[in-house]
Length: 546
Image (cartoon, rainbow, N blue to C red; front, side):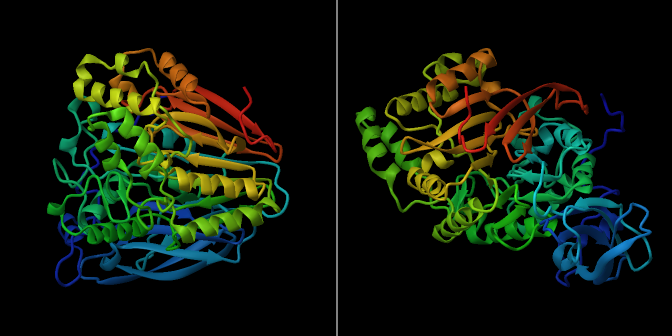
């Protein structure tokens, strides 16, 4: 089915009220200049509990107002004849006119409708949300998204998921937006009408930049509809800050761009303003006795520097194979490196022990893939000529490293093997039925995770909403590429390396089933699918069966 709506440019204009460019007096410059007022970015909900929910909106008042009070209503019906909860809050230019309110006293497993009311009596769009269930649960549906690059395509995955009636909660595992300016993308990769601000070669660096980019993304109608229809649990990965970020810096942060900690703080502030999230860095969400979902932070609070420089040096050595073996047995195995930090590692291990005794499944939302991935021997020969020698040489280096047992992705859990072992051992010791839910790679993967030769759980790794996968660099049949990856990697049960979309995770007491949903296109606005793929893990098996 194709959606016929007017195409529009997602840029700063008369329909987009932005209050992020701050004057010395604290007023929103863009809001003053553009003239847009009212509820500019619809509504959203998140941080679900059995008896509570966080509600979000954005309201720009008439000019000359520094602060405004909003009221919220929560009802059991869309007509608001049975209002059961609500509250009041204040917002201002100091938080870009975004507003968040947590309401409690709600009933478990119940659908609610909510709206905000401005001082002039105007009302926001009506949102729908649902609290988490309590006690025995027969089924729960979770939609999982990652890697949503607005200039590269339409958010058809969001639109398709929002139209479903079998999903209870959204999980966004990162790269909700991207920091790059338009000039960073090749013209044939992007859609000209889907521009974002700051524009051209200007990437997000300052608080104003991050707020502006969020405002552009959140103006997308399909993303607005997704947020309006169900609550979201969201965690950031790197592009919400900048590429390949860690506690002390990032691949895409240079000294000419200012202080890293200032940039990181700006990114975190804008994210927490514009997203329906709490200030808690990590959190657990009990889904009755059926499952527990964990939101993690693995990017900028405690992640240590990846060993990319050490690996690059090994490749440049006079005897690369020997240097790679030394890297494999030395720097790569350093137990001091961490993705989560010791505090969060301890928290997650403790929660897994507690929840494994009280819920059937333990689902961990993670920004990056934990499954181990080696580069297939065939890949350098499959590179498209137009991709260039630089890509082919990169693949050759990754093949050389893989022959020595060094996996592909130092920025993911592949680059943190000691920390990976600690997490998987914690799951084994807790007797947990571990299900990892991850994104980041832009492609689709399913891993049977192992530690010390024993099954440790499974991973459903999702493909991107719009970001390019590796298919653009390869001339081979995608089915051949997938087979090569599966044949090369003992943990890998299945892969797809060329399609966009999202995952649907269906949870029952007996099994967890993952469905990768593939959109036919992202270059036109459409709900048509090219197909799906499903895999299940049975309770107690902790691996995918062939």
